[in-house]
Length: 70
Image (cartoon, rainbow, N blue to C red; front, side, top):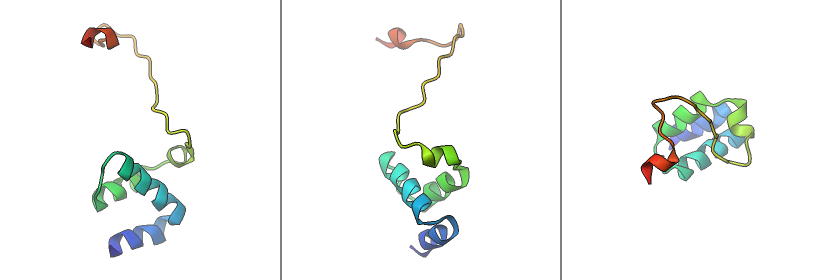
């Protein structure tokens, strides 16, 4: 518990809350995951409020599309 408090002091309450909500959303319930999200964070990660997954269109002969798996 004191490790999480140290992370909050270092990163601020708002960022720790956002990182914690990401952990809960993906069922990452550990200090290590929380610390990793905070260490990998960028301003884009925490400013994104719509929480829609990033869509990337890749055209390559080895990439199978959605229809392949039906």
